[in-house]
Length: 164
Image 1 (cartoon, rainbow, N blue to C red):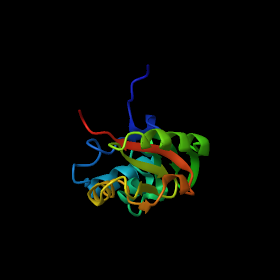
Image 2: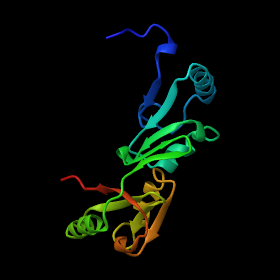
Image 3: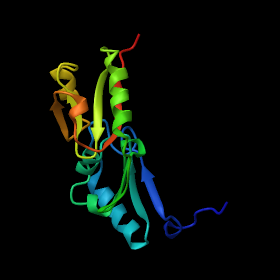
């Protein structure tokens, strides 16, 4: 394996967000980031944000820069390189409905349905408090009456299961 001798040898840097790149209050050293990103751009090194978080939440962390970055969001279910959508999972409706049916058997599970356009909480199954807390992580979050009526490309489910 060749040792990295110079930043010119590095073609890509991927960072996780929670507990890694950003502080617990979702801040980071913006002036330092700008300096590093400019240097990376000069030598052709790409900056990739990789996280289980929603793309829109990640994008909001980098105002003015998100069209220059690559994002691997939603645990890999959504990948965007600058302005180009590279990959988006597309769970078949039958699969989505089957998962919804299983989750309905366990009302103690608080679920978020994650789509390309938004994330969703179902009225009557989660509290306003859960919705408000979830909105910290999902900058596009909507109430819906029934998950099965959501018209979006579904990327993943994000269940919260109570501890025993």
